[in-house]
Length: 58
Image (cartoon, rainbow, N blue to C red; front, top):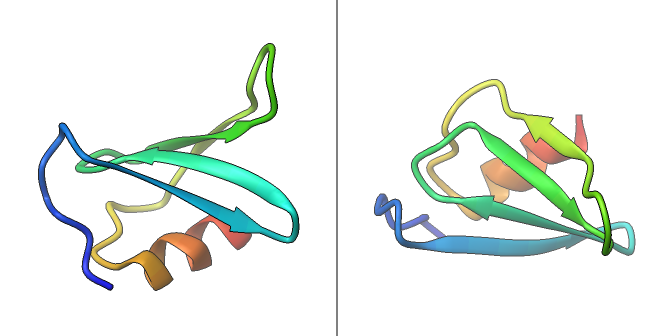
């Protein structure tokens, strides 16, 4: 699925039981776990949900 290129949009995905939050049009994401969340810097801006999952899985 293509990600809408609008900074007001976001996607939450579950990978191996861990939820991640990504705000569209950026290169950062974080793990949703309550309290202080672990930040992740993506290599590039993902265009699709599958690309986002691949970048988060690395």
